[in-house]
Amino acid sequence: MITTGVDLAAQPARTAVAVVDWRGGGAELTTLRLDNTDDDIVGFAAGSTHVGVDCAFGWPDDFVAYIAANARGEAPAPDLRGIEGRRLLAYRETDRATHRITGRLPLSVSTDRLGLTAMRCADLLAGFAAAGDVVDRSGATGRLVEVYPAASLRLWGVAVSGYKTDAAARQTATANLLAAALWLAVTPDQRALMEASDDAFDAVVAALIARAHALGATHPVPPAAHDRARREGWIALPSTPLDGLDPTRPVASPPE
Image (tube, rainbow, N blue to C red):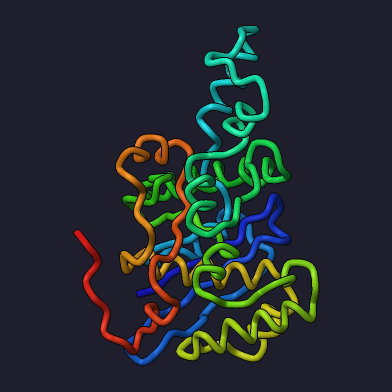
């Protein structure tokens, strides 16, 4: 099995790609690099069983309807005035589910600083579709799945506090992750890049989450949310410990 992780940014310079080759005797980080175009990402993902992308795959249904009504000069229906209504505009169903499971609320794709990256993600998903991939934003079918590294690391119990902004914290986070995944082989240069760049670090985690999803070891989309998830996207969160990804251990068949 091969999995690819993508930490997507609005521009190629901070877009990281990680590729992990999973074998019976261990797992090897075969590719880790920054500065990737959409074509680079599609190319690196060739041959991968699953591809985890750290970016929202869509926008909240309520937000889309609200903006469309505004463009037509109509009052939105239903009336979403007030803070509770604005929260419906700001967050997707998967964001609320992630908060319930992890205690961590993702940034809003419609109101925080994610808009440009989400627009690029829409183009990237179109690029995968043009290359022949089935693009299911819910992750229920096809290779592509939306991931959230920080929330997954919390569920796995890997301490990474401050790694986004502090170099020393990132060194500690890298050490903690690799100590928890002794079966993952990385080169000294790859480790140095993880320590230097939170984007590279997150791309590696995204590739691990892609493995979890491939094994059926992520929380499923609730049946009532399936249709919405296919429009808004759905974050795949691990449902088993990080040890469950260890390729040296017997793997149970994923649920049908």
